[in-house]
Image (cartoon, rainbow, N blue to C red):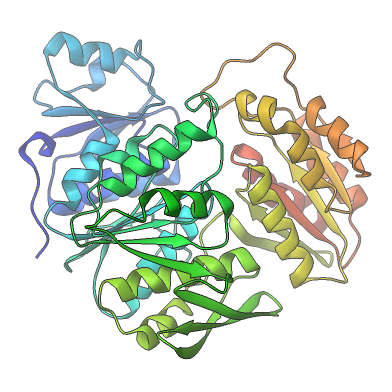
Amino acid sequence: MAPGIPAALERPHFIGIGGAGMSGIAKILAQRGAKVAGSDAKESATAQALRALGATVHIGHAAGHLADDATCVVVSSAIRADNPELVRAAELSVPVVHRADALASLMEGLRAIAVAGTHGKTTTTSMLAVALSGLSLDPSYAIGGDLEGPGTNATHGGGDIFVAEADESDRSFQKYDPQVAIVLNVELDHHANYASMEEIYDSFETFVGKVVPGGTLVVSADQAGAVELTRRVRDVASLDVVTYGEAQTADVRVHKITPRGLTSEVTVVLDGKYLTFTVSVPGRHYALNAVAALAAGVALGIPAHNLASAIGTYTGVKRRLQLKGEAAGVQVIDSYAHHPTEMTADLEAMRGAAADSRLLVVFQPHLFSRTQELGTEMGQALALADASVVLDIYPAREDPIPGVTSTLIIDAAKAAGADVTAVSDKTAVPAVIAGMAKPGDLVLTMGAGDVTDLGPQILDHLSS
């Protein structure tokens, strides 16, 4: 049986309860029997799902939303100090708990797998959650996206395994004490919190240092940042390091990845034996994520053959190359990619899955700081598409930075030979794409902001 509810989390109030990370913790607590409450900026399917679990969800932020008997207020790094509910918590002397501390407390007493990396965390965590569930191990999990099958990002399971996406963006992943840590890649991102690669390495070293004695680090043998991290932690006596990838030196070596339309067949060499299994999403990077998941499960003692077959049942996460529909012979697919590496990987995956189709992209940059640092690389990635529409920057939690606009991306894309159109009015995009698309084309909406809302609207325009 999984542990119960920590006393501080018996009556928690979540500020921003509809967020991907926050909602997962709230769902698990509600399923464990906590009296969960919270607020979010707008109504959503997530808010409705939480209410169905017995949670109280307020829309909008106001001091009165915080109940007098709340045992704590849970916040993420995105919550500003002047939030009225946070101010009210100080007045009532209600303890404030960071979401990472709340999640860490839910993992206590369980065998935890924490999945980290600049890219691929959600997919890899999801693969493990689906596979372990398919093997009747009934894991708990907390993921940064909704699984296609269960349609949720978190659940409280009755087994002894907890799979969690570990977020490096604000260093909060340093709170966890996993039995198995996965590091998929290490790159410079989240420029508002990290000034250099050295700071990134230091942060990941701290995360790896929290693996319980005798635990395992599963780490890429291919990606340069991960290789450097491995060099730095290899001599930690209490840590078993397992590398995976296409490198000849990898402990779990990828022998071959064979694209098969929107799926891949993967053959690995594990303990000197060949093992072949199917990955039901396209692209080399998703295949490598599946191998990382395989290595982590094996580190927990799960038979590799059983786990490989179960990973093959994974069908995707919302917003990770998710097919939204087809109209007038045009398929519309949604991608969460917002970093140049992710963008390139998803564009190459779509190229490989449909080599004879034109690829049209609607890209919405995410964050001014990221665009300032990586706008050139984003534009270069868009050169992989046949044509692109670029929207204004989605600010999320940031204030504008003078001189930082989508023009940085558009200029770089044009310099790389890309066909790019700037569209500031998001409502105009469906008509623009409908005018560009022809039967057989693929349309990819891409970005971490509200560009995802355009998929159904584009389909409507194509149908009319």
